[in-house]
Amino acid sequence: EFNAETGHLEVALRLIPEDLEAALSLRENRKLVLEREPRETLEKLCAAYLRETFRVEPAFEDGLEWIGLELDGRQLWLYFELPVPSPASGTVLVVDLLMELHEQQLNTLYVRSGDSRRSVTFSAHDRSRPLGDLIEWSGVVESEQ
Image (cartoon, rainbow, N blue to C red; front, side):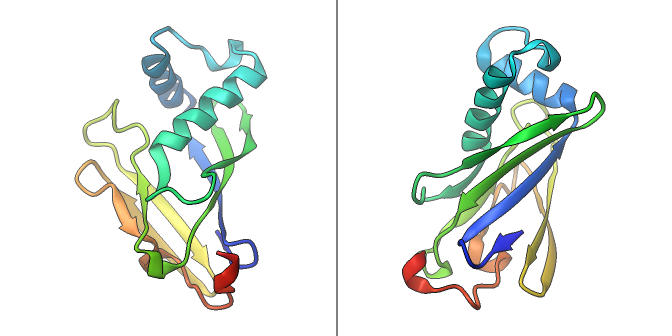
């Protein structure tokens, strides 16, 4: 959801735990088991992975703001925010989560912004979308961007 007051995308991301486990294991060059990792370590690994695979380009401000995670065995939820600049900046949202694992990976993003609702799919051949196509910018004060 785009929060016009803060200029942030507020993200709740649902993943299959085994997929994230495989991606983090590959990234860390070791077999990683989510349930066995200390919570603080797991959160740092997740935030670092998201900074690489769910991002605004060119980078804006400090990037991803980690909120936390929930793991219940069958599902994993990651919560974070992304500050985004105004659409005039020509920035794009890049989502290439898990694409290092699955050639045919599709990531679907449901965007709520103002009164609009959109569904956008990212793939290995289409990893980015202009922010101006995803977010309603009415009500956003330009100087706060």
